[in-house]
Amino acid sequence: MVRYVHTNIIARDPARLIDFYKTVFHCESIGETRDLRGEWLDRLTGLQNAHIVGEHLRLPGYEGDHPTLEIFAYDSELPAAPAINRCGLAHLAFEVESVEETLAQVLEHGGSQLGELVRTEYEDGRRAVFVYAADCEGNLVELQSWY
Image (tube, rainbow, N blue to C red; front, side, top):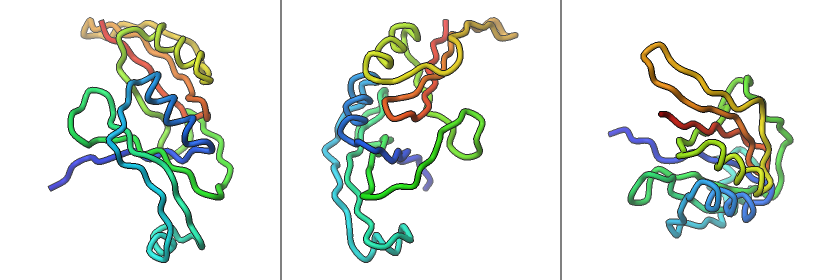
């Protein structure tokens, strides 16, 4: 069996980031908070004295307890700068009813916009609105709406 379980974001302020995703994207708590440490975690992460706190949030549009957005924080972190074209995980994408209204919520809750909001039509006639934004900690998010 193979199934997708979660995507992890490491936060500077996990409470603020958790609130952002609950408020803007309607992610829901499933009651899985974490305060992890111990020899097993040090071995797993390759870090000495690793300590993780955070919570799993069910992604919108799903039932049950998966898939989730896992928002964690470590006691120490290495700096990283997100970029839309870097190798590795680039962004999360959410289909929303109104890109404009959701972008306004992103901005209202401490996020930012990256690039322009665009409208496009595909060769098969489908039309869409897209914009890249960043959450309140700079993680990149794509907003999309199809019509």
